[in-house]
Length: 220
Image 1 (spheres, rainbow, N blue to C red):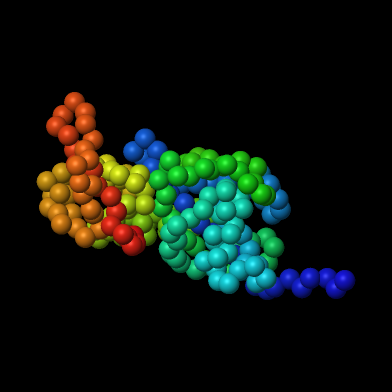
Image 2 (tube, helix red, strand yellow):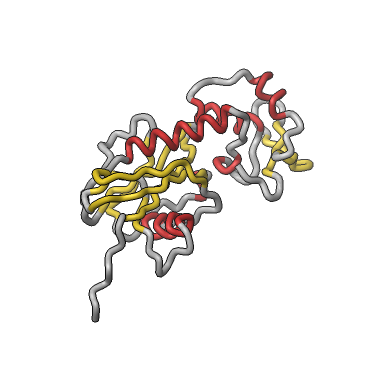
């Protein structure tokens, strides 16, 4: 059997998968099991397989599912990096993505070619990241913050039903700063992405809070 020909440059997809834990923004890191950099920490990612992948979007979805057993409903491209020194295997091109998922929908169990996983602070991940993934993570976080700063609503971070306070806290966790409640409510008043769940409220010590859901076909 003829030896399978390696494609050059190496084409990869890497994903910054963000969630909320205890109202704090977290990103998924994996500990690599194979060469290069076995035991090193990195964003989930892998090499394009032209026999399996119709696009780099498919590469990102396939690799993340294999390494973490997470199925992503939403992906967004951030940037492309290339060069001879990014990867010890040779000249490489990597497309960076980010995605948002609520923590209760992320069965983050280590999958193939992964030693372990960890949800980390994206600004201070606590690990030295392999390749140029510290740069990639910074770009993904900056892109996410810029988008929310322009008024995009990160509904993919929230459960199926949520309060406006929970939505505000999600925005604050991404931006890294508090928001004025009155100004925030004015900003999202009558937002087409939000649908009030008729007759459903979150009840607590204070007056009941109306529950909302994302509108059908919502895209962040």
